[in-house]
Length: 504
Image (cartoon, rainbow, N blue to C red; front, side):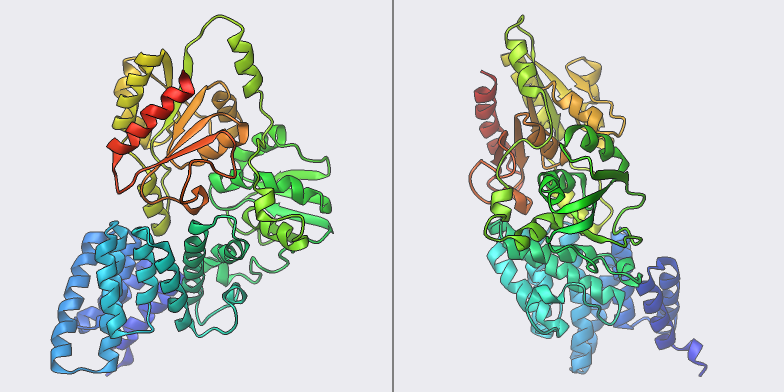
């Protein structure tokens, strides 16, 4: 038989395209393999994963169900190690489907079945994600540490960062799992230096990173004094704004600094962040690691690591994280002036949804940060009537449409953003209070010193601690959390009480 007529040939070709990121060609090759033999478990699994990453959940679910059915029948006929491995792959995909739909208890069940079939497979890593989704972060961390051992690396985990495996996909998987471990550690202590170090693995979470001639960890600044330092923008806007506080300190450790930023952050940083004249602020042309960097460089979220390593006795994440207003702001003076004039309505800004994300894990995180916009607006209108308030929707994107009927009735004003954070900052400074879910708006208000109440679902990001209401990053921020998934009534009862304290 011609090798091009064998299912193995088409499966391998599909996998090659899959790893190269050519989804259409990979799908075509996988389908060709299944036309020849529709019981190929690895091919069924790979095609299902392809569909999952493309958001085609219904098609993925059909393939996974088909694969599980074939695996059970084949296992009944002949128990062998290779079949156990293939069955485990499909169960892993079933687990991933549960995670994509926030069904963490179900995902835990599937991952435990995977571990029985393949004790040193990917099941432990999926179990870690499921446990994290159930707020069991200590268990999640232990599971992830065990799961990482399957990659066969030696030495401490932080030494694995930046090391290439057999394929870009494998390298990406390793670095994603290291980040999952870091998140579990940071959930219990967001000032833990070794966990921040592990978090630099995020720079390797995209396959395209591993295809470049230069990796992001090459020429990475270690905090020592140098002649030229390049600091570059990364991650989300909230991440960037949280790290503004460390840019100023980094500038003291170089003769010349180049700061690369996205366009919408340029004017905000130029006009509101106190930086020396030798800090040259430039547009970052493309997202991710700037490959044309020749000098020593540092992504913004790695700044506290470099500073801590440079002088551990005096500069630590804890000391640098001390709550303070970072951006120049006239909010305090404006509000003092207003108290001496005629009584005006107090202004409250509202945000109920996080922005859309492309990555599957980021989508899940974004989805879990949202609260029902209708509930927040209805509650806010009650405050407006009780405390004589003006309400402003700071919500952007399609989620802003939730407020449309109240905007039409004149009960809520809608922010019309031009995509520039400086103009947004000028607007936020005019507010007396911001009530928001976990978005960049919280970081902006915190850096400006504008009072803000952060609303968190039962699952929330590591930077907001796991107890108490005060956060080390921002002096003007108070935090409220639900006690269980989507327990909004309890959250709003807490919020009503806190609103009274702020506005009385």
